[in-house]
Length: 164
Image (cartoon, rainbow, N blue to C red; front, side):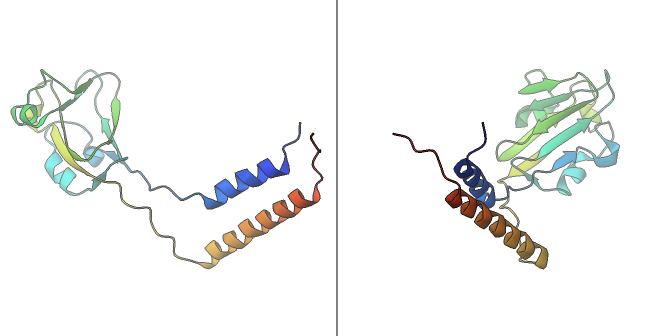
């Protein structure tokens, strides 16, 4: 069964009017030093902005370290006995920042005292970047409207079956 021109037109209008989403960022905790002891994670976190929708990637040595999300009190005491979330399988863990506020992570295998802990302040997602009109943007818009006009013309010219 062929796609009806009206359905095709509706889909095209949906895509033409869609707003570009804000871009989430994937940040490797610790940068090139990854999730390991004796890394200054406070300095690392201070060098980044964290927004709702961003991802934190913890890369670490398998069977040696873990990633434990804790509350502020447990973070200060390096106490992983009552975790919010605990992950120790594999070589990495990816965590999506879903809410605003401060989020705390530690390594519960004795390395928290060697600096293996990080807290990040999650801010609301930034608005999508404004697109400055450019010649390429204008060209895309012309082609969008040309395609839309062609589809509307085709929809008008193609006879549709009459239903009683």
